[in-house]
Length: 343
Image (cartoon, rainbow, N blue to C red; front, side):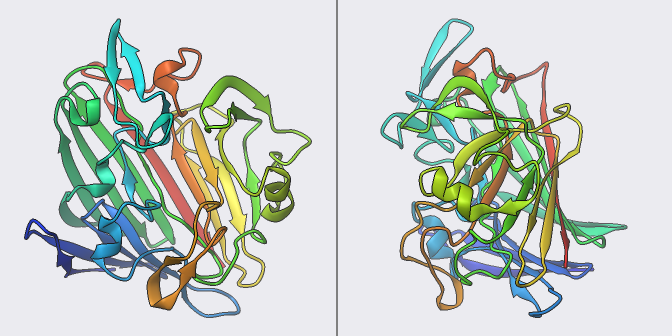
């Protein structure tokens, strides 16, 4: 195991962003303290050698621009809050609308556009980076002062660990995730629609034309949202209107680390199993990627990568029937996800 720290670039403020590269087991992960973003993940394969399986940018500049959140840590609230507004304790709050009818991924300047504090550490089985950030009261319209600590790392068992913690001085919505785009054939290797997916999810959220939940939980069985058995993404993505951008409700007890997903890439033989304590995950098949300049000369178009964003349910501050995503002094936030790789 080892940890390497280098300079990734210099922000317009003059502050330096750092790049941390972790090695444990057979994996190598790089992360930057700008946006607490995953920038690369090198994974072996049976037939094609090693490859970087994360979409990303070659330099810091790509991460500073508004874009598709490649590898970024998302907060305060991942996914959408309809109308950019909610009420808490009878008090209305207005958020920045960075979509036509929603506040998305924390608003105009979410956690993905902040420079986090970072510390590295090692444990018996792995190497880690601990990122921390303070979000002041009123940040992007959200109430309360929030202290966030996110730890990412690799273990000797070829696992990528994501541990999310937050404490707030008053009740406030919190929903943290990482927005990594995976292509298990290697970034820049083309479409991910031939990847095979299995999900432990008996229902998903119905959404309207603006991708805001209607409040209905729909069964996954028997249609393009049924991944109870592993199958290729392509047929369902085509039937679902050209791709997925949907929230699946994970079976089992939220708060317990449980298996929620498995993805297999036939050409390389790589597979990824996902475990989480979170109640849901957002499956996104990169539908809106278009001519995006990536690493090593790659160009990312639609379906160049997929996301499995473990999270609380979107628009839950406006949906009392959804599991609560309100956290505060009497309810600290703690969620954990594990990505286990094989080949």
